[in-house]
Each structure stands twice: as C-alpha cells, then as structure tokens.
Image (tube, rainbow, N blue to C red; front, side):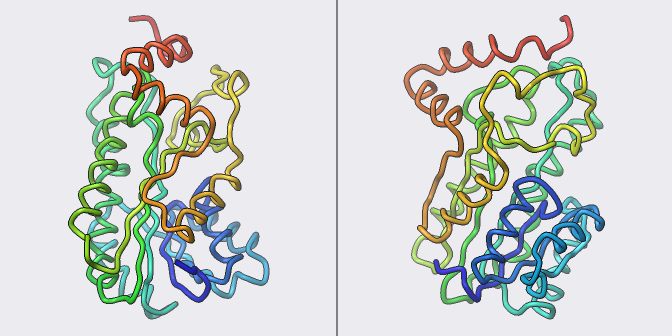
Length: 267
C-alpha cells in the first residue's frame, strides 16, 4: 500500500512507538487520526510533526470505552476523510508479579487495554475499511506473546490473543481488499512501564540488553504497510527468541526466566 494520501487511525499516538508510527506516516504524506488518553501528549506529537501537523487530527479517547470508540469513525471521517487503515499500537504491561499475586483490578485493566481496546477499534472501523479500494489493519503484539516472561504472564496472554485475533481476521478477510499485519516487537526504548502506571525505578531492565529506538520501530511498522507484510519481528531479541521458541519452547522460556527472574519479588 502506498500510504501517501491515505488516512490512518493510530492508537497510542501520544508517545513511544505509536507517536513514531504517526510521525512516519505523516512524513510519507498520509493523514493521521492520533488517539491517546492524554491530550497533552497528542499536542507534543503535533508539535513534532512540524509542517505535517495540518494532516494530524488528535482525538483524546480511552480505547476501552466502547461507546466512545464506536463513535470515532464518523468523527475521523469528518476531520480527515474515509479511513484506509487502523494501527492498534497502544498497550500496557502488568505489575511485575506472579499471577498468584496479581489483583483483579490490574487484571481487568490489562485485558481491557490490550485486548478489548484493539477489538473495539476493529469493530468500529472494519465496516468502513471494507468499502475502501485498499485497506490495512495492523496489530502490535509482543515478543512476550510467544516467549513467556515471568511476572508478565497476563500481559503475554493478552498479546497472544492479539496474535490469533490477527491471524483469524486475515483468514476471514481473505478475498477482500483489507489486509492484516501483526507486529512482534522485542525490547523497545519506550517508557511503557511508566505509561502503565508502574514504578520501575529500582530495576535496570534495559542496560543489559540492546533496545530498538522507538523511531526505528515506527519506521519498521510503516514499512510493513508499504511492503504489505503479514508479520514482522522488530529487534534482534524478538528474532532470536522466535527461532529459539520454534526450536524448543522450554529453551526459550528458560532463557527469558534467567534474564528476568530478578524483577520478581520473592515467592
């Protein structure tokens, strides 16, 4: 798909990967409806867009609010025109605790943001996408969806749900003009912990492993659209663990456990 002149909806456009996806799309001539729960973050994204900001429409919305999301297609089309693609980027991690210690408030929040949120967007915009000559759905999953991270079991489960949701959609949309892509990022240099409401000041989770810059991740996702990719891995760690998991799921699980177990409180 040539993104120039197309209209895209990007969740989490106020920071991190979502912001970089929005900026990359704008830089290639697309118009972007940027969704985020924080308006000041969207204002920062618009400021970074420079002269491209005229094609950026901010929408402050909680993607878990189904009624609000279902009302978005009409508002976005009024602002920018018919939508040609949606990118479900927004997501949060859980507190670094075992399932046994994870309270139901946190459980519901992670499930609502990571699984119900993308599903709300898909249900809202898919009818319109099916009327377009060419359309795209991109869902951002995680390396944690195929290689379990201790203390992130529920997070990984929601992302595994995104995997099958994406693959199932692709099957259901076979023969239509809507193509579907799933993205598997590894470690990206974002503040996902802080944005998830977690205090990780006592944990050094990035210095011992190579992380991908958010801009590089955003560019890779947009490139997946232009090259009509079905699946992409972002980062050497995501690629390595993908292969390790194919070779031996137990090997992959043990490797991650050894590297991440210190983040867990004592059992």
